[in-house]
Image 1 (cartoon, helix red, strand yellow):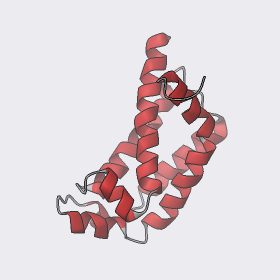
Image 2: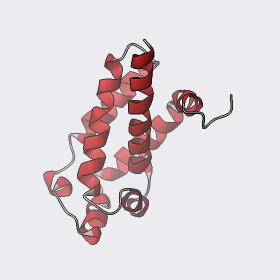
Image 3: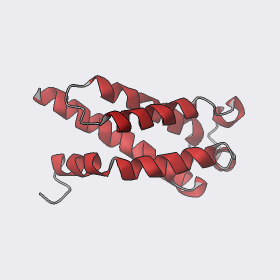
Amino acid sequence: MSDDRNEFENYYLRFKQSLEVLAASPEEACELLGHYNVAFETKSDLGYGVNLFSLSSCPFTSEQRQNIVVLLEALETLPDSVLGFTDVPSESLERMKHPAWVPLRDAAARLLVELQPVSSANERYFGKGAA
């Protein structure tokens, strides 16, 4: 069980960081990911979130699970032109400014608030939060 908990906490931390990138402004998202292939990396990293559900220590409520799934499904509607590879900072920024990201940013921000209890527990797990 402890290995499962460790796996959940590590994967959740990465998922939360990816949500923070998505919720950020296009400029902040590019800065957070080093201006490298930001749109593709953001979508790809968030896609692994569904794997959290299979871990027995996953504390998500059914509503949280549903809202994660809704966000992941919405990511699938992004146009291919937004997701193409680029290592050019100005192209990454332009792709993150596409209007298709706006509702996804809003959804990610709401999900971060909804997941705050899980995030707080995750911070405590890694010794970063108050006991």
